[in-house]
Amino acid sequence: MSHPADRPAPAATAPPPGGRMSASTRSTVLGAMFLMATSAIGPGFITQTTTFTVQLGAAFAFAIAVSILIDIALQLNVWRVVGVSGRRAQELGNLVLPGLGWVMAAFLVVGGLVFNVGNVSGAGLGTDAMFGLDPKIGGALSALVAIAVFLSKRAGVAVDRIVVVLGLAMILLTTYIAITSGPPVGTALRNVVLPDRVDVLAITTLVGGTIGGYIVYAGAHRLLDSGVTGPGHVRDITRGSVTGIVVTGIMRVVLFLAILGVVTGGASLDPENQAASAFGQAAGEVGLRVFGIVLWAASITSVIGASYTSVSFVTSRTRTSDRTRTLLVVGFIAVTTLAYLLAGAAPTTLLVFAGAFNGLLLPIGIAVLLWVATRRTDLLGGYRYPRWLLVVGWVAWLGTIYLAVNSVRPVLDLFG
Image 1 (cartoon, one colour):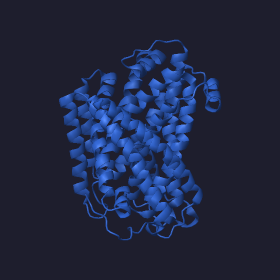
Image 2 (cartoon, one colour):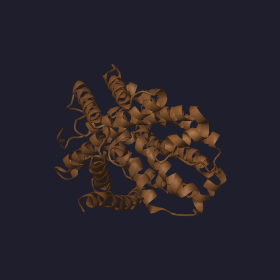
Image 3 (cartoon, rainbow, N blue to C red):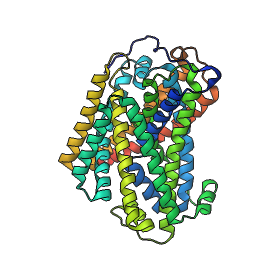
Image 4 (tube, rainbow, N blue to C red):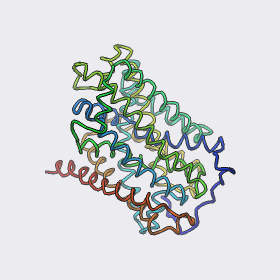
């Protein structure tokens, strides 16, 4: 792991006159925001959305809307501080308090390793639904696909393109299922502002699942590695952070509507796999195949996002060679795939621990970045941070404290 020095961040490329993004910058921002979005849309995302839709029905629309607003408030601050400073989150942590960045990195990597076992497992289940392939074989082949992406000559471009293509594919295919299932859209819209029921647990779970752990840093670190940094790129950074959350929100909404249509139609879902059952009820055999594609796309992009971001926390932009970074990413994927092949899935106990790590990391990491924006403006290259954004960020940060408390409870229950 690199130990950041008190040195100015590498110079960023200046935006073109008139503030319009160049084609290369536009491509980079698009890739970064889809990396963030697809990192959030993993197997757990699909399971959470399905479970809460079955439990809450149309009232779940309110929880989705509130969680999106909280996510935007936090992502705006994370992307802006990382992007303007030109430093990764853990580097800023070490500058705020020596050793704090190492703690952040340790939490993130532990959580990333465990959850990546779940991502590989999800990819295996996706190939099973698509082709009837043994999940372990499908998981291993999917991991090889992810490794091939990082071993390609233009790995950065490959990552950007694959997450965009698969992200759009997930949204379009799920939209098809949503249309087929015929959800009560009017009832869902009414519940956005006048919910039949407010479930705080659902809101906190969605926030944690959307920006918890490595996810909140995925897009910002990708943008940083692409050279889109500095005060001159604030507009690009802001656009990418908000759009990334919106893309995640769109996927959440269409998946919610797809499941809602089936549930309100009176269908009985298989408790062992509610999401697959809902897709099958909506579109028969085609629906099951579509579910397999969506699950596989969600899983493989999460493998890419978890691996890339975890390694970014233990390497340096300036001191680590591209080859070393690539080997670490490949090793990360290989270790988690081997763990999946040996265990069959991430043990529940480990997933609970990883969830607690992610829940603890979120308020620590957000606090570090907000502290930099509030008290260490010397790290922002003279950029004057908007007061309104700080207020919004600190208010949203209070919500992450509640999230952290809830993430620790399951661990205490394990020992209890």
